Length: 180
Ligand code: 5GP
Ligand code: MG
View 1 (tube, rainbow, N blue to C red):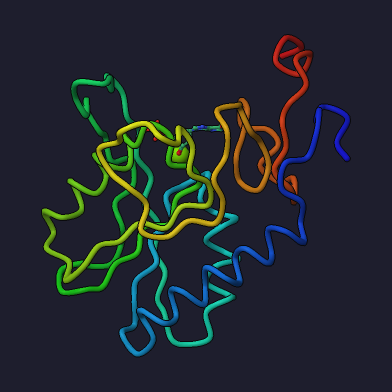
View 2 (cartoon, helix red, strand yellow):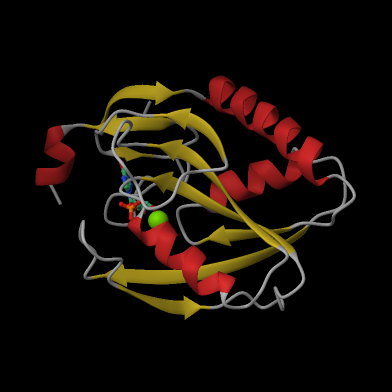
């Protein structure tokens, strides 16, 4: 285990099982529909890569990068699209693939922006769902795990761009924050 990690929350085998299970749900809904799986960079990249390979029918992939700021509990703030999807999503069955649904404000803004392009459908698949029991502007259509409100790294999730490559999800030690 990486020495900056306090404890592992979701290990590799557990993650692999959850992704397979989620893929089965998505397959039941999308087989034969050639969905477009849009990865929300960078955090969603590992989940996206695993999820697409767990789907045993034709899919297409794309990527989007956005930066959100000015978000609070009263507004969705501003969303700046740093990299739009390269595919034309109008008329497509789209699944947005994201790392974490936390307050939901960034995903809600992203969904709002993408809906303007008139996809046939737009659903959201997240690896982790946080802030359980809190009203959010958007809910996940598909998710692998629920998580408590602590800061997590690994499996695509970073702290200051580090730890994304850890194959598990873990809680950072306090000194790993202070040491940077
Ligand atoms: P929200 O849903 O609040 O708009 O923001 C969700 C985003 O915040 C996620 O996509 C992720 O980038 C970031 N985030 C939320 N919780 C965590 C966490 O525990 N660890 C990391 N690394 N990022 C988080
Ligand atoms: Mg993110």
